[in-house]
Image (cartoon, rainbow, N blue to C red):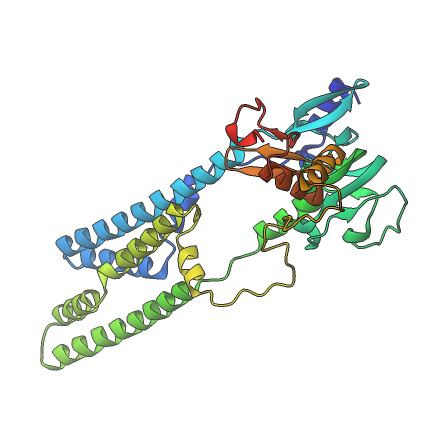
Length: 385
């Protein structure tokens, strides 16, 4: 596929365009701060106070509502900007064959019909069918939950085969752990298997957190109690020959006074402090309600080890044959390895086969020369063995 054909196909396949991180919807974040039942009760109380002439009370409640919403908005907007910055920090590139030559292009420009060039440590930018393959293994744990890399091949499989059994296919978002291959792109963006999962997840309505359920129950109870109190007081005053308007205003005033104006702000401040504490430990909380959900978690059930662990191997000991030193053994493993140690700024990670990467780490720890480590400039002292 030539560059001109790729651009024409991208322009034609509107629904098949790659997904790009959207800018945070500040209006939606702001609206979400006012959807809490307790905040709705406060807004109603402010409106009633203003209607019956309690201007000072209405202003006070309004200030509390605005301050509460501003605090929640600031926290969630900051988290959204941080998530977006992380997504855009490292540009995603894809190696493709166009016009008869291999070139690197932004992953967003990959189109159906392109020929992908896949190597160890690289991320698959789109769904594709293999046309050439040499010892290819792909980490598909994001899609299948299997922590062991899937061995790929060119043999055709039945169309109805489960995703994990589709050996001649590679999928967007997975990682090449071993080998090399070329694949023809069959789907990009929302039409990939990962895109379908993202679409289903975005359509799902998240359940209310335990705290939201309790506050919702408290709000309903307070509304019912407030109405009952207002009716009882108004009826009592009217029975004592008080004017109907006066009895009504007193009953409503008592009901409004029963609303805990500071509760919503106190809850938001507590959740914001929790989000700040998690941010200090490197965790970004996109929504304040998630802090309370994490606090309620007591048991995590899983049937896969690779989904919770780092899924990395470590050489605990090396036992060479008599007459061979540990350094010589590890040096031979370095020469036979196709993996690489990469310094991404946050630490050294393995690019390639996990077993070969573990041997490289062991060789580096033992001071064996030749343990590769790349940073782009190879200038980091952590890369020098």
